[in-house]
Length: 324
Image (cartoon, rainbow, N blue to C red):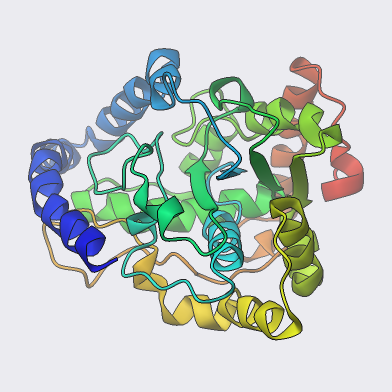
């Protein structure tokens, strides 16, 4: 494991240098009042169908693969931590989560272990390795032998989490958004993190497959041990009571908050780490009222329901997340 960590740390400096020109351009655009426009164009190019199709190009999943498929800010790191700890019987240790977990659709040049690097699987006591993706199902390679964990979160909570996360990153480069501006983007077809409805609609039909587990963020919050047991069962891993307790401890909000920096993207900030984005901000469910009012919440509900209908999805939005 030490050789892997040293390799990733070496990559860090090289990759940050590659990213620096883009960050300097964003900062300059921000000073000219063009930061939002620059960021939108950059993100649009990074989310093109061509870019998405290249993420897993030619990759064939195996029985060793556990895909964690989430829309951004939907409990991704939580699900990664649970799956990685299950794969290692609660003993997984890392300096940075992507020392162990590949993220093929990561489109900015930060250090992430390669999808085809065999070491995470070789060093796993269960022979399993975890893969992260935010892509919709059309771009994720499917194999009956692989396992897929999908977490769906109330888009109102996703909005709040994405706003604070985005603010923590882009403010560093002189680009600023009000909650109202962020909401306008979220309820459009041109959002920075792509479409919540498109992602949800793409994976919902997979729910009947034996090698797929779909959980909601709220379910995980309500009964974490049950969620861990269900994920472990999907992965084919039998945990002792002691191992289950250890996974639960390491998947608790308090523990993950204490190692927040191990999940943070190592982006060059041009101003130190004092304003580094927080990864484990609050971990709440159903608390979007902290940022947006009832009318704004209704706007998100109505938009997401209309989008699901447009995609022909029968996802039970009202039962899951309310709305009119």
